[in-house]
Image (cartoon, rainbow, N blue to C red; front, side, top):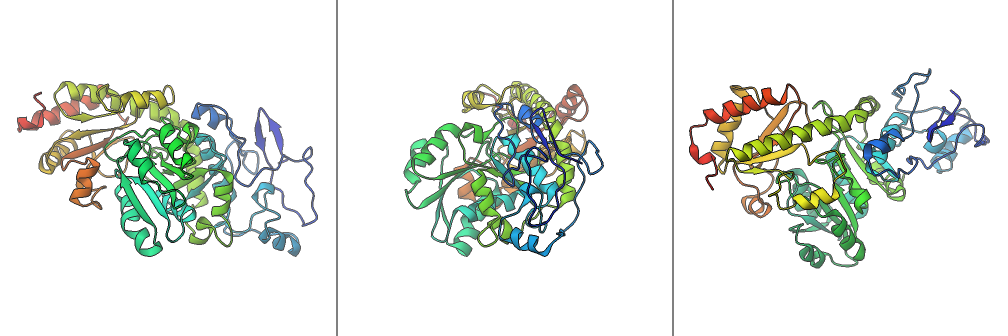
Length: 452
């Protein structure tokens, strides 16, 4: 198809030519940097997604085609040498090899950049590959990271054990809400990254993204935020962060059937990560499959609708559970320590997040409640991960935070009986609430309720 421009979208046809080909803007399209969408100015991520470049299918289908090729041909031998020299690239629809760039994966990257309001994005095979690639690109041997002490267990293990051993990169962990401690931990000239989660796993601590970004930038540090828990709810880059990473496996996928990640950030960083000689993404090769990228690009348009319902139900359950006397942690509750902070930062209409925690104090009581919820009342499933249409629940201390030792969990505020619930939207709200109530009534130990 010939390329056309309409309503701010750029519809680019496939251009495969010789090294001598010139590209007339009026004839074909406005060439862009390899991963750049038109920079989104909308504050609402749904509006930004709607304005992102749309790719038609090869034969005019409203959905883009899947480019399943691992390698790509050229018409003239000189073209290939120019491609490897960086003179021709994806911005002009010249592709070399799908570990480098693939048209379908590239399109998903444009959508992720629009969602997060960044110049560029690159999609990876997993969330952990996105995190590790960013850290390895920004830090060299002897480098230093300042991080929140409350993190997903896999990220904590990467920073605590793997990077010091394999790369001589060390991390200082701090209470991310203690801004003075964050400032004091950053060593100017040595600390390369300030890393934290927008909403922490599993404690649902909300980070002050604008202030942390200001501190990081004053100290010459790159601010990297994991926004896996809060897509649509929070937009870290719009709040000042430099880089946003995601495990797309969670809310963005929504089906608990795909493992994927994304790095969203400045074009110069993402391009450097794809450098043939020094790029962490290019050389480590956490490549996303094109068929996965196609699946995910079809799910992004209804992410906003899904997040609204996840958040609506989480809020309602948190209110009702608190009234029953349960020790509930949810940023939408007015007694949550960062409720007002989240309210000041959150994107309008998307609520306060789709996760809540119930602290049963001991692992035994937590396991007993989850057993009733899954095996007797069908409220949800005992499983890790989040963002599924069914409610997923796990005892974090013995599962997704098990990489942390007892002292680290205590410092992070992870109780042995903390149940993390990713609230689903299947069934009606009242139907699922009755299942939850029934499970609670089966619990004989009255100490599960907070009598204060």
